[in-house]
Image 1 (cartoon, rainbow, N blue to C red):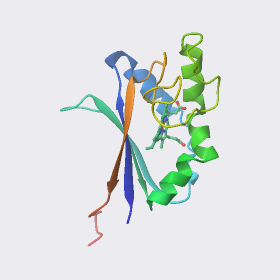
Image 2 (spheres, rainbow, N blue to C red; image 1 turned 90 degrees about the vertical axis):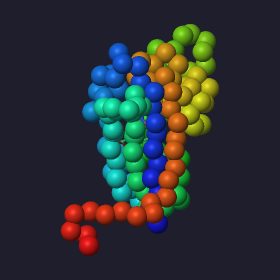
Image 3 (cartoon, rainbow, N blue to C red; image 1 turned 180 degrees about the vertical axis):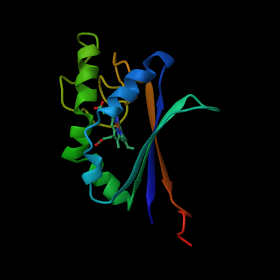
Length: 139
Ligand code: HEM
């Protein structure tokens, strides 16, 4: 059964373009990951201000493997470096390379942004199991 992992991002209005640009230039590594099924960056239009990074995986194990992989690190390296550059001196932000101890790691709170980084001020990982799905002509 597939699982859906969503990183829900708090993005101030003024840094929305920065976030979208970062994703426009994303590494494209996730496409190669074993068990990867789908990715979408969802921009909020109505009812919420939260951006969603939607991913779907063949299994929980496949997602966990990707999250602890080199590919995940590559896909986030620039974000981590940027956070480090923008963080105030002595904040303990990573000096490059992703610090992926999970959202809220030292010097990189909240994910998808982090200390001093422009893009987002917070992130929460949501997990779902797919109970039903449909696609055109799949019946
Ligand atoms: C500390 C936590 C995280 C931070 C700081 C972060 C930040 C970012 C940023 C800014 C990008 C755009 C690319 C770039 O600027 O380098 C990105 C890409 C991405 N993020 Fe995250 N993210 C985090 C955790 C997660 C998690 C838990 C997921 C799981 C749903 C996720 C899914 C993705 C995907 C699929 C991409 C595209 C990667 C690719 O193309 O290979 N991120 N992330």
